[in-house]
Length: 329
Ligand code: ATP
Ligand code: MG
Image 1 (spheres, rainbow, N blue to C red):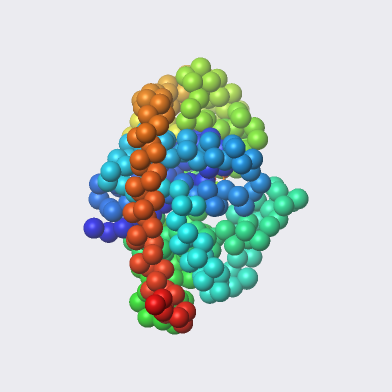
Image 2 (cartoon, helix red, strand yellow):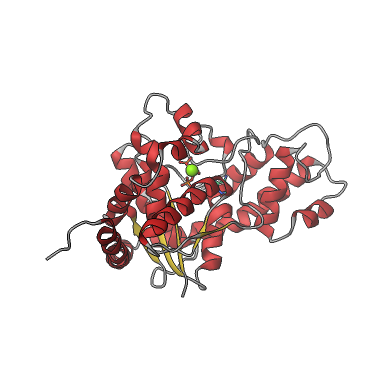
């Protein structure tokens, strides 16, 4: 079986963007691949976190992976911080990555503008840790939203550079980006992507929002004064709602446009809200059930960390040998 790696940061409550852009595809792909799904808590601390909150969110995120439909017996669902190979490989790859490459990363530019009081080295080398995450498992495919494409390109460059020097060490990963939902925008500013770390709660639909909240957020979503439901760049707010509706119902944007031909924004927003509710409700129910089963979740955390460590160590030993570290006796 080919290998798949992906992860999410425990930096906030998951949004509909995370679900439609990533998690939903994870579930679709999980039968076809040997999958590693990580809660990337080491990435989370590139931005200051409250320790108790981070711990709580990490567990909630791990539980949510399962609630979304990932079978924890078949998929390796684990905390990044429980597998020290991530950090060890990241260090080595740091030495094969150029400052100039990292300087071009748009996420660093965005995040350092947002957190001007804490532009730490981890934030800068974030993409190298991400490369380590992926290469550690020799992943063939990495399902991500469009916002992570630049990081994935860099991962490929680093892997190719390393292989160029030492022979075939790393599998070169391919991105997997879904057709609809790969970039869900903020409901309050359709020029920005929806982010779980956005301060404005009305900008995002959270996976745990109740139906009333979801309906209210959809009704308040920023649109325009064109009063026509068309899928085009000139109407980014409406376009985003079409994307959300299409991704939630399995329709194409064209089909959605036809369906709402001649209808007003009010009706359309109601339909979008209802479509989102019907996708999230089963997930929320399953989450509520799982959350109570402490022993089950604990077991998964323990077993999967061991499994991930086993695979990670295999790659790590090979890499350590290649760069010239002394053998273990
Ligand atoms: P943060 O603001 O803390 O970076 P985030 O919402 O960007 O949070 P990440 O943990 O960085 O979430 O990303 C998790 C996954 O969700 C990645 O695969 C990313 O590409 C995807 N993703 C994030 N935001 C969106 C979005 N608006 N639309 C589609 N996919 C998204
Ligand atoms: Mg992000």
